[in-house]
Length: 358
Length: 252
Image (cartoon, rainbow over all chains, first blue to last red; front, top):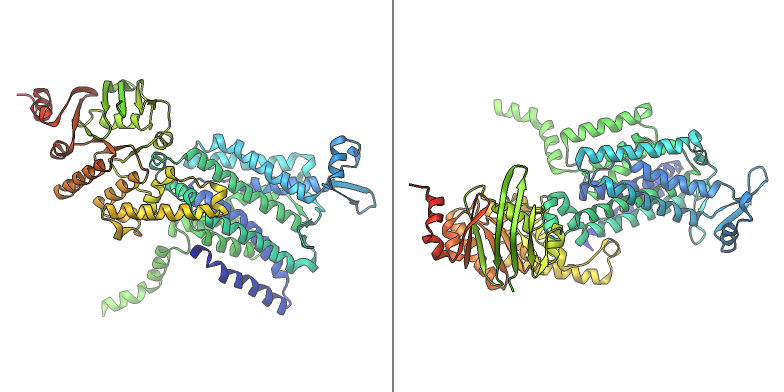
């Protein structure tokens, strides 16, 4: 239970931010906080893959896009022309389809968000298995390059396929009803509710991963990172554990993609871009690689700043610079002791030298 | 039936004949040592037995089961543990956590049951933690349980590595130069430990350079030279063997 205790102050912060924003009439901050929470869900999954299992992926924006795009495609493309198809009739009779009207009053029949979400996440998991089996045989730079290749393929696919809207992406994605009247959508009225939905999903993900890290599986993964050969000799099926972690992190990315797409009401090809993957890796690195709390904190802060437009047109450059600076000065993350030590030494150096001279 | 049977084992690395026609067996409950000068093929032999790489030809039977073609994690699951000459600690993990990884084959929690903390996972975790602490106590390093393992002194790392191997509840324990890098006091201590481990009912096969240690604790000794077995006998007989003396002391 000890490992879950820091969640309470975090929860207090989350509630505090909402109260302050509601009180000061600055609810628009909650929109970016909600989006940042979903991006952070992906980052937590990537943190387990990179920091604990020690496997890099430069293709996680691809899994995010697979989740988002499949859910968006299924919930927006009308099935009216296939109405007489047996499968469609069956789905309709089981309530897995959603009927309505388009903006122009035409009849609309689409897959319900619940089913679409399930298909999207399952697709991401299956693709992760097929990519992971060959690719995870590689190590270090080679693994980075192979996953980068995967990311580029997904980017070009969503850009080229008509079903995914080519350069325009997919818009008018419907709300995703959850339970008790809650739904994931971007309506102004539901902003506070959606803020809490996002944080609920993120905290649930965090708890699951904290549990995982502090378990037989988590120790096995850290063992692989520490010495793959010794972990193997201890009976850890390293190939299987690496693959399972890869799939798990892909599922986290896909869930983030599904939720954010329904929240934004659409998704565009930039979500699948290589620079997005690089950004996620940079954030995990800033957070300290094997540090879920660091990844969470940095995921929220940096994504929030980026979404608020603080970095302006230098957005990607900022994340590139972060990667360089962190690798040079704080390879164990910005929260690490050695970094704070170096920082204090840097600022107190002048004084010490003066003292020494006197 | 012998616990471990090595039959006509050959290993070639390109043109190098690392192991040539080596056969021997290890009986349950004994301490058996493999000795030989540097480059005799001792570690290669260990790596083949534990599944790190396959032999060129020949077979290794463990409790009657063929090990050739099995991966190290599968060999481990059958009840064979090993240590390394250059200790491979799991860096970034405490001594206790290192030993807890050793409990891997003795426990079963998977991804989903760990993430959702099923009730039986709780019990398993408690059991793993207690057992690991017991082993650290057995090896007199309990006070370092929560220290980062890779920051411990070399001798202490050796002890953690042994505890980690014992956590697997092995039937056979392979020790690759357990006294390497240790001073004479620590070496004597390791000797006592190995005897203690044998008395727990665990069969030990070790590769070692330190002659005094090998002669003290071994029940039987195999001598390798340039990949070939040149002798296999009781320690007293090995000490008298003219060919072994020639290898170790040089020719006249």
